[in-house]
Length: 225
Image 1 (tube, rainbow, N blue to C red):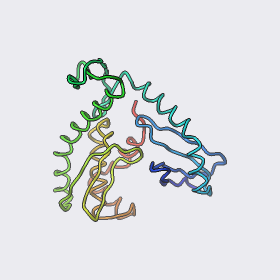
Image 2 (cartoon, helix red, strand yellow):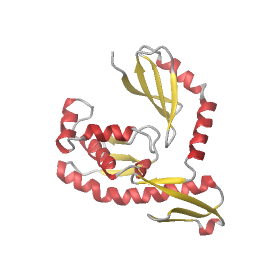
Image 3 (cartoon, rainbow, N blue to C red):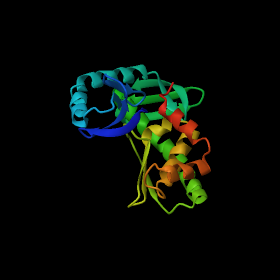
Image 4 (cartoon, one colour):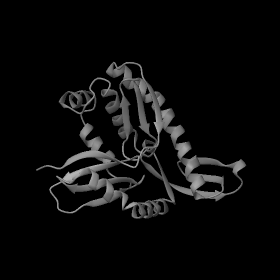
């Protein structure tokens, strides 16, 4: 029997759930953003899984702390890793400097957490500029209706589509991914304006515009590095 993938909300956090023909339960903190993925037996009870994940909260926080330390010396932008330097100083001078040759310099921050918060905001601005050009191109090409879109930090999804309000949401962490993968997410979410669910008609529409969508989706599921 094939594995089944779904999602489970635990205390406000969406956890990716993979049901497999296995006996034991496995929880993973997935880099680079620390989202949660659990692999469980095919017929495991959802409430029992939620309780088990809650019991792992201390371990999850420890793993996420390790991730932050491991990525402390570099940051990604549009699929490319760059060196990252953080220089402490007064908050009045806080800024992010970037060049493809030198990488990132975050200066004028009080601590590493503040540096990453500032850097994420900077990445979000770059992603917004890219989407401002990319989304209208694909709207026109797919003959999609007018929409609104926004960028939010998400733990387990790269994008979402609210059909009732025609609003698309894109994950802030897409700023770390290549333009081809961002393009896949844009086409994917625009396709939801025509088809709500991931049925054959939905994937046929995606394939019409992105014949290599499966390769792009697989690449998006792999961790950075």
